[in-house]
Amino acid sequence: MNFPFDAVLFDMDGTICDSTAFHNAAWDLFARRHGGFGLAPDDPRLIPGRTVDVMRSVLGREISADEELFLHDDKERLFHEIARGKLAPLAGLAEYLGWLAERGVATALVTNAPRINIDFSLPELGLVDAFDQCLGAEDVLRGKPHPDPFLEACRRLGVAPERALVHEDSTLGIAAGVAAGCSVAAVLTGISGAAARAAGARWALSDYRDWMEQCRALP
Image (cartoon, rainbow, N blue to C red; front, side, top):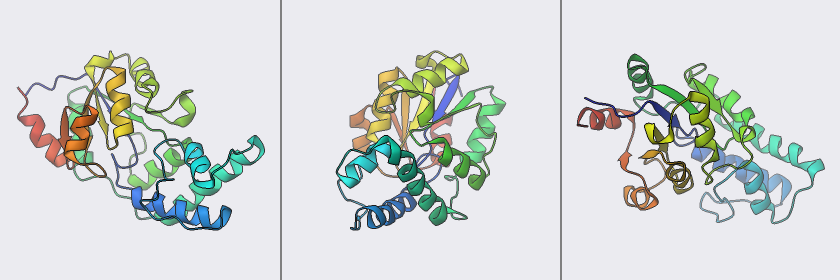
């Protein structure tokens, strides 16, 4: 089959692993500790975005520069405590990464998550050094839904955006990939196929075994 891309760009949470439930549990503990209330997984204050944006939404106020780092790292450490030993790669990911490497296709991890979570998650998943580039919240001024993270990943890989495929699991990430000029294959861990396509995804997959079967059918 003809794989028509020179690079594949992966989001992290929900895309290489299904970690949403662990983050939701961490946000609940964070809100109880710093706001005096709990959070259900579908609470509207759990907006998509960077950790600091969700913190502002959850606490309902601006966060001073003096407390931002402390609150940020406190939430992420709660996530680490909950998720340690429980993270697993999405089915077929290791085979897919090997398949891409055999074909000389470059890869990058491109996430809104901070470096503290990348450095936690990749060892937990057995994916240290699995990607040619790893970009987190600290690597660009504007995160998703802006295209900047994917554009920066393409720049670092030396690949034109139209020659890059993005894997994302949210409308926010899909929007960023489309805005960057990339094709998007959505991972349906937290979004319906209809919603993914409405956001601009060209393909949808349940996991990477499913996706590799679809790839074999590409012209």
